[in-house]
Length: 323
Ligand code: ADP
Ligand code: MG
Ligand code: ZN
Image (cartoon, rainbow, N blue to C red):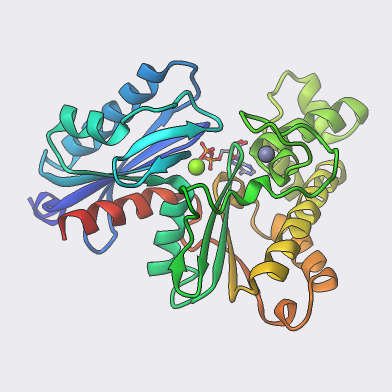
């Protein structure tokens, strides 16, 4: 009874990524009453929409059916007026009126924004960037999502396409960017959960005597999470992969610090589970290479809400919608 009463007036925040979906039933104090997880990876537009609906229904049921609105953070270019997903780097959502489809099916008000903008909103209002007038956010997941606050405003650009910070080029003529980006040498090609798994696999083949190599021989899938785990356990080969990725992240952050002179750079997404293993090397690069005075003042910190900033930010969007 008490839990149901507390859950009354919840909204549902949905964070959709290239790998996973998280839907949370969230109250006005940003307490999470239920979490619904789904895998997001698919080539089928209808399947993506059904996954969203299915997770929202689970979360709604878990809090007794009484929810006020839904917020969606999706890794796409969003038309803010209409809630149409126009382009998407890692999911099959092209010119899909996501807001109206979900609102019609659920009979609830729905707000939609880019997933990283949603994460920025949560961290800016309530988390690691609280009170900042200038802040940068990077979510490291399947790829990289970016959020940008400049002079106290969320930066969206002329057509909503701004703050794609993962597509900052860090290596001229470098690796082709994964997903639908046609660039080369983008930060996202070097720093992400996917890149961590890819590099982990490469060195596992080169160093069969390392813990990574033995994991590969034992038939384990070499994922970002495994590289983190083995780095924690002291495998130097895994640690080198992680350290290189942290340095690449630092190169990207150096440019962001030089361009925006932010008070804080917030790093979130699934990969931030690696914590200081990643942020330590990144900070060292920024401390050596960024310009003064920006580098002396900037804080480079993990997201307060960890991998849940996007979901909570989507919930904030929904709360704002119903006032
Ligand atoms: P998305 O939002 O793109 O679906 P997430 O933010 O959920 O992605 O992050 C998923 C990625 O994070 C995967 O590529 C996975 O390998 C990586 N990941 C998950 N856990 C860890 C971990 N403990 N350390 C490093 N990477 C991780
Ligand atoms: Mg995500
Ligand atoms: Zn790119």
